[in-house]
Length: 134
Image (cartoon, rainbow, N blue to C red; front, side, top):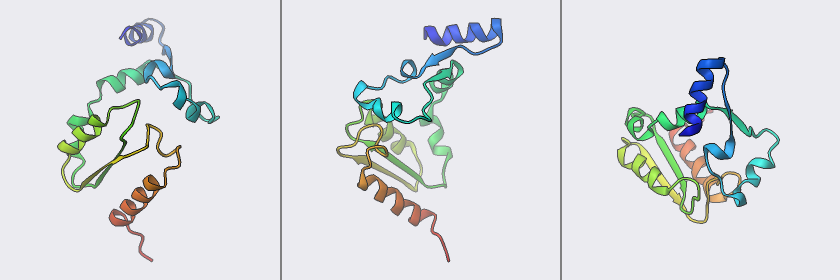
């Protein structure tokens, strides 16, 4: 909260954004940081407006507005960054069609973990809701 306040003050007084380290915004356990640090395209600092917008955004209040578009929620059952209860709440509030898959053995970066089950779930979901017609 202090960084959010400092960011607002700096923007008001100096006209530029306070830069905030990535891991101060979302704490990522050290064992998962290699997925970020090994990617040369990873951004390691963000303007203070980024965590402020994340703090103010309430996806549980927005999810029902997506309808009638299909929603796919994938969440690692062992996610060490975001509790699975967050996706469960989104699922509870979403309107059909909606699918929730809690992936056993997956953590926060399930796509980087090259989890075949995740890839197959996404492929099947896309084929179901966005079929390609020849």
